[in-house]
Length: 471
Image 1 (cartoon, rainbow, N blue to C red):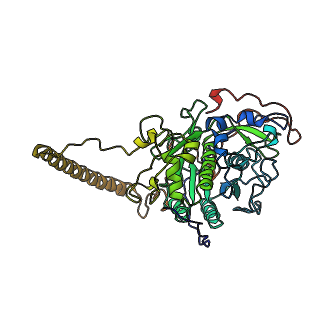
Image 2 (image 1 turned 60 degrees about the vertical axis):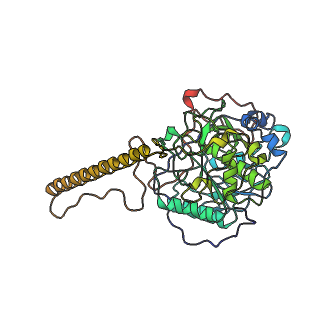
């Protein structure tokens, strides 16, 4: 329920995370962005939408460590100076402490870190993060990162004292090792936040590790607060947060500018990770389960009443998460009644109090004998149907085996398909990517890069591209 400081464990052997191939999903719109003469803060529309200034009157995230498992973070950006802890690289030739971002095409890790913990200041000419007094622990992944590297990075970050782990990356399917990585973090009092993925990269369902129970799976919303058309959605969705026209800092060499406009669930994930840092700072005695419960229980319900595939339990309500009276729970409410016996507890008043799992599709009262008789009859009918289906499947399977045996050459056996322990192969239309590779949610930039300029450059921010280019 509530604990003091989380114990620091000792890193052990690393199991594989997930074998599904990762595809990117957040688009970096490589538009030259504001320099010090142009107010960056004016472009951060989501700060006002989330009432971040009011939240900062309560806390700014001091003392909280957020691990950014990504491409690395450029420590020389003015918005991130002094914000980074010594990190680690998990690929050959990578930055030893994670303090650079070799992603010269998108600068993904730097952008995510700035959204979480940008220092702000400069009379509004610098990026203000959701939790500007939190510290970033960079965990750098390379262009050919494997499932092993991701899992090792998560475990290392947890062992180094991360309070929140941001995973703006994902893959297809599911895998027992991704579950183990998340469970490792949760067992050590760490909040795990991951993006659901983007449709433009073939994610038609929630990606892994966002689909692992207990993870805060974040979908994206647009400037109107409606679900973003490019966001992957599904029953595992937990929270929704802004995902379009997000101003973010960039390392040198991406577009000749110090900033760029970005979109994607990567950045919605970063916003929620920043929110988790604020909650942990304001309520330092709350364990990870109750931090999750507070974020979920105070969310603003949207879409269908209760939890739904697009918004999950609702859109992030940052101020309510920091101020509402929320009963404590004994376990992570996202693990379900089978493990925690609880559902997210909402502060009052809010539609969050109505959030509960859907009831059975069909139910009858048993106050009288007739109702009980109907239930018994339906149960028997269901058993008979199930038996018939099983028999039909067994017969069909035997016939199929006979046909394969007749058609196969002596001593030859058909391929077994996906190896044990590997997530399902990408379905039709899904990008395969580098074998076993993991990359941050990101696809190629929209439009042409800006001409080279001194870092940081001057000039205003160009308008965002048309809507049909942001999907």
